[in-house]
Image (cartoon, rainbow, N blue to C red; front, side, top):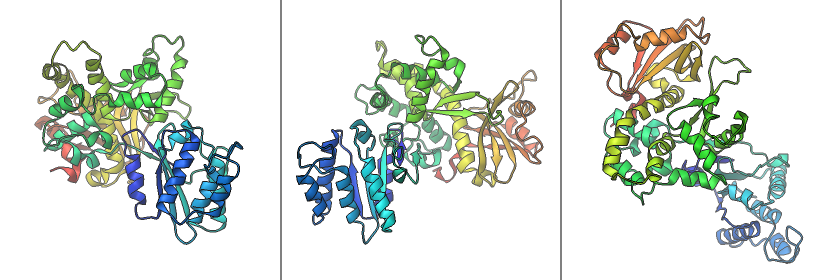
Length: 461
């Protein structure tokens, strides 16, 4: 079972992973179940002309799956039997792409699939089935027949920064990070970018023009996934400026009478992959303190800057709107996108910068602490990090704490990592680190700056 947010490249991933193996890749059409079965039969015959199994003929001229009159369309058990017969002497991979359409069509295929998998195991036949489609809308495989339960469930996320970097505009590491904070890592978005021009030019061409290919993309994703988008959009707009807790989100939909009524909407957005939920690393096992955030920067950027433009009277032209409304606020937007980017770096790329990837990665918040990046490295060292997209050129005044002092204060407010021999302080920066910050870090053997170049690694030009 492979699922992901629209634009995550689920279909491409499955196709490339299976291209060396014999089998059939079938994209389920948006049609009723009998027509899906008819199209799959035609696909089998086109791919394997000599397969025409006797079982198929029997079912074609006999009763249909639902006991109705003869339609010439084979049942699901018949189709799976024929596919299994093709796998006797070699591994065989059946890919049912856009499998969420099977649920829309109320396809009753699970019993036939379970029977085919049971027979394959008994006969030691290498018959592999992959269902790929939209997160949150996949058929409930295995709910009735244990034999059909997926051996592996894979959620396809957006590309991390380093993988997305070659497809982002900009030449310097900080330019790539800025572009990632605007366009995110979904392949369905990245394929439209022109890397030879600036972020601003891409925004104006792709998002602000009426016929831009990305102008309505997030809304079209949402409208394909839920019946009524209004309340879902209100929740997503509340998260567009950064993650939030339940109290703020419960006020995002004014026509709800109780705060608990927001729960089904948040759950659905989480199932679809639009929203991620997190708990503080030092939270008690039964704590309900949860924060919610939009999973990809592009969706957040679109809701924050493009949706207001598309629903406005358009009193200003595109260029002035970008220059006056978007460009000055991008710095704040990127600052909000930095913590998840840095947490991901600690999970998969800290081996290069710190000698070990994180075995635990998250953040810490409570009444006495606010640490956006925290966790434990594979070496056992605990780390606590703060994110500064654009550090001030001048040292903070004596009346305010510098970043390391703020970290120290928050560390004293949490029990996470208490007693560890090695506790690191990390300062993640997006733009150049000022001299005062480099000196402050150099004075301590437990502190380290993680620069934009560190975040981007070998992907930097």
